[in-house]
Amino acid sequence: MFAKLREDIHAIIERDPAARNAWEVFTCYPGFHAILMHSWAHACWRAGFKWIGRFIAYVARIITGIEIHPGALIGRRVFIDHGFGVVIGETAVVGDDCTIYQGVTLGGTKLVAGTKRHPTLERGVIVGAGAQVLGAFTVGEFAKVGSNAVVIKPVPAGATAVGNPAHIVRKEEQTRSEKLFSAYGVSPEGDDPLSKALHGLINHVARQDEQIERLAATIKAAGIACPNLIINDKLDSARLNRLVD
Image (tube, rainbow, N blue to C red; front, side, top):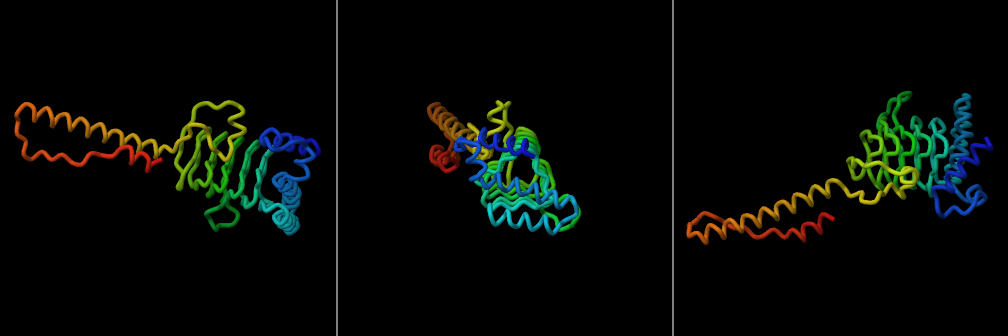
């Protein structure tokens, strides 16, 4: 037990630059307290003392603002940063080395008791603040869920899910530090793929406008009459790109 406590404290110090020492983490980090009390609640739940497990989870919620159902499976070195408003459902599984920020919900979308209703986070997953991961699917190893994303489908290993509903941004190989820590699930150069696609379409149309203008000028210079040729207003690509950003 004490070895696990030391491991959890070291993991928090490694991932939170604001954590100055083990005593500060032990006394002042609600995420650490929530994980500790969940281990008690989960032990009672597995031993058949369901009410006691639920009561411990309820007390933990009052103290920390973090609600973890005693039936949820929480791995080693899990870091719930800030944590207020985090909800983790009964059949959720949180793998080793995961990081969860405030306002996250690992929720279910079914009403059938006794079935897998909540998501599984594999090793090293980072879930940004306010994200909602809803359903009985898997978020793969070292994947990231951006802040305020609403994830309702599986996320491949190493990918990033952003938006509402979430869509997938595939990432290149990450260093160990990038895998373990990415503040709020935000990655460098992690632009929204829909935004990139819209920028590409806008720039493509702008280039087509320029080509059409040159063709029209060439035809006119050659003395060829084209009475039905209509030149539309020029696309303001700069303004549209600013709107997409």
